[in-house]
Amino acid sequence: MKKWENYFYAFAGAALGALGLLFLILGAGCLLSSAAAFVVAIKKRTGFQLF
Image (cartoon, rainbow, N blue to C red):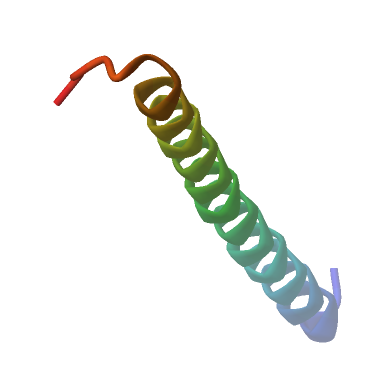
């Protein structure tokens, strides 16, 4: 394997890892915000005290 191929694969792996981490963080944020919105909607509708 040539030297530049090693560098290329290392760079591609790092980029994919960073992208995966970003999607993970974004996905978790979306999930949390939607759950919070759901709880707020239930509170407004029923006057139910959850927290």
